[in-house]
View 1: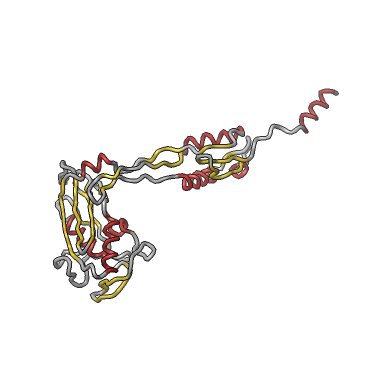
View 2: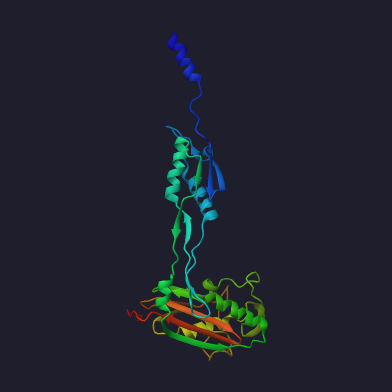
Length: 286
């Protein structure tokens, strides 16, 4: 009789309760709070972690705490500005900690584990590929046309310090991005079907055309290039490269054995692009 009563009391006694709430912090500050039930999927032998929800949580935390690395670059005087490493969520470590919480109730507070993300271009690489000038081209524009000059300078800054590795392609539209008011581009003259008009970003074709002439090298393969529908004053006939966000692009491929460095500067009516690489640069002929 006693054993029956004991069994009944045990059956109605509450079992150990696993904590349902987990706090995730970054340097002591709360990033998010998650509940165990939200990630539990019913299963025959007990709750099972829903993979899709777990991955979504990882993505959300990663977006909140990650810091992108910063590549090394050259300043206006040609001095190297050192790279800065970034970091992101260490998913493997966080996964282990979350599973401990989910299945055992501990810990109930996790400081986000991070892993470093290293920049693609460091000071050592940059120091090597700035040694030898392999291409150069200069064009001129009227600084009095402030809107057009401003657009040229913006696009020039966008491609400055760009490093193209062997076998990679450079897309002017992808690197410079969409030309919008929000990015600072202004309305200026453009050529549309042989006629002059005004549009946001007018003038940047001088940057792409100057770049085309600078990379007209034996180790550079021109993948995509289009000429304007009428001649332009800043380059000889047939030596231009028109670009448009919803239309033509200028694309080329690095067929050298070393990365190339693009140095671009547009100031005071002068658009200048220099192409550099390593002392050991050579064309990889097929």
